[in-house]
Amino acid sequence: MNIYRAHVLICGGTGCTSSGSVVLQEEFKNQLKANNLENEIKIVQTGCFGLCALGPVVVVYPEGAFYSRVKVEDVKEIVEEHLLKGRIVKRLLYSETVEEDNIKSLNETAFYAKQHRVALRNCGVINPENIDEYIAVDGYQALAKVLTEMTREEVIQTIKDSGLRGRGGGGFPTGLKWDFTYKAQGDQKYVCCNADEGDPGAFMDRSVLEGDPHAVIEAMAIAGYAVGADQGYIYIRAEYPIAVERLKIAIKQAREYGLLGKDIFGTGFNFDLDLRLGAGAFVCGEETALLTSIEGKRGEPRPRPPFPAVKGLWGKPTLLNNVETYANIAQIILKGADWFASMGTEKSKGTKVFALGGKIHNTGLVEIPMGTTLREIVEDIGGGVPNGKKFKAAQTGGPSGGCIPASLIDTPIDYDSLIAIGSMMGSGGLIVMDEDNCMVDIAKFFLEFTVDESCGKCAPCRIGTKRLLEILTKITNGKGTMEDIDKMEELCYAIKSSALCGLGQTAPNPVLSTLHYFRDEYIAHVKDKKCPAHVCKALAQYKINPDKCKGCSLCSRQCPAGAISGQIKSPFVIDQEKCIKCGACQAACKFGAIDKD
Image (cartoon, rainbow, N blue to C red):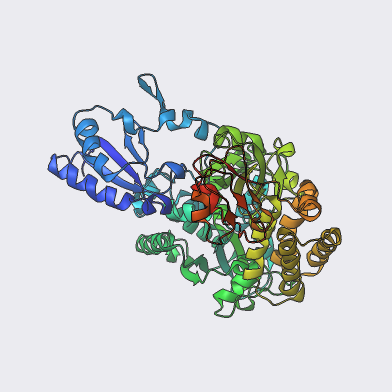
């Protein structure tokens, strides 16, 4: 067994992989071999470190040097300078880790300082394709503990006492769901994992599975023991190829180690896992539609009750939690319910993982204690809005959520606080918007997604959301009326009260929240026929400022519609009837003479 003097951790998550981290790994191997260092330095492929905007990421230990945006041509310098001569390559370091001549640890940077990683504890730390590394950080000890020291009732009570609520969006108490499944009568029970994750901008579950798949496998085995199930299924979208491959590897390794299958730890407990790939239908994030899809049928929701805990997969009692929920289980068992309950708020215990995106400096994956304010997430962890723009709103909960305006930026992020202001936690997408975003257009974007993804089973969702989108489109085209706004609001409440499943019932949320907090923008679109953010193309007007125009005719020559006329060395004019709002004239003008109104 080699004792390595240094470890090179290279992010192997989807973000860094798309930026070329696989090629980096090969180049590191080549350079280590060229310098006779292959027996002294170990290369470790990890999951996501969190700072996705800085990928590809390379971290060298024991120094903890965090290299960001590393290119293939940088590898030779890192190997020869840092690994061979012991001189850290400062020009490649993440700027926030450099303080004069000292290197700060990642936990001291603004991005990490307020985070508390529980679900993400092993992401960016271990090789997700090596079960030995998971075992080295207490992996499968929780499973051993419940099988040898705890009754099923004790396991369920521990989860109840922890206060863990479902991280998939609904926030239902996890221990209570486990208890319902445990008490349900059935000769066969199942444990399932929702890894479908269809919200635009969400990549939390994907990152956990790519960086720490054994955490989910161990938790599902614990859940199987607690509720009396011997078979589990992980339902994951096929668009997650890295996560799928690592799950396959992890399941195979767990079977080989006797941690899945028959007579686990010699206790007589049997539990095995299989994968089921989804085709990317958003509706399959709804629990009954997901179970229907696992059965090999078209993914459509079923009326509830009966709930899956009583009648789920193939009509048998079924426990279904999402990836992040399971990622907390082993730590709760090992460290205790009180440890987990000590984090967060009175009604929202523990931490929550968010995919932070949009108009924000630090795009990436964050895990914060429940109750952390939106301001802390945006300004401290996220680094604020770039380019000197003002924070306007944050959208949480994806197509089922709502928009939080700047006036409520000090709102604590927890289940009840978000619902109180018309939004919701959702699975954890958090999209930041600035003054250049049109809130009417944002509502339209999410509604377009919902209309496209509706399974069509119930009329309120199939027809109602289509009518809503038609009205929104009419408004963004400058043809809306004040009556349309009232009609749209009434339709939203009708859909919420009558749609079959949770996805249809929450589809109007982006419209309702923007109507509530940004009604003035809707009125501007209707009455003034203007988009205050200059986003809605049909309402835009390009005008030439005669005081700035030099009469060079460049704009006229670039206009594809022949809408610009004039004489050389005299101000040109745009014919608004002919203008197609393409913006080619503004892009071509070298004198800043064309304004968008």
